[in-house]
Length: 86
Figure 1 (cartoon, rainbow, N blue to C red):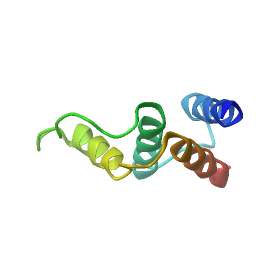
Figure 2 (cartoon, one colour):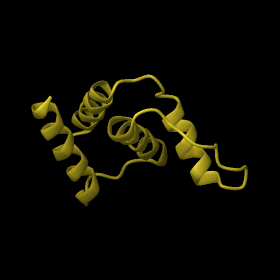
Figure 3 (cartoon, rainbow, N blue to C red):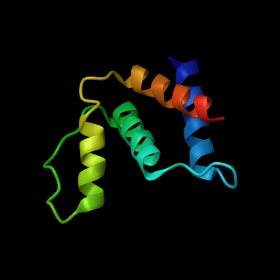
Figure 4 (cartoon, one colour):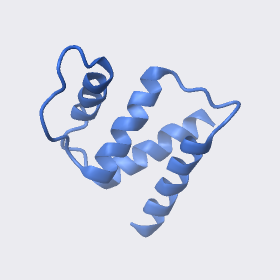
């Protein structure tokens, strides 16, 4: 898993420091966010944010869709999604 973890960390670093060409849509940002959270923290926990917290609610819902996905699978999907965009 250490090789997968290294690739994941590299992909996360790329997205966090990307400039110029890489301009993901809000939907894509949510997908990366959810995969990151699933890979690093596991299944979503806590209460769903209220109706007026649009951003928090969207993040929660995106993460909740990945419930049950293993950390390794989430890491691999994150890497694959980034590679598909490059």
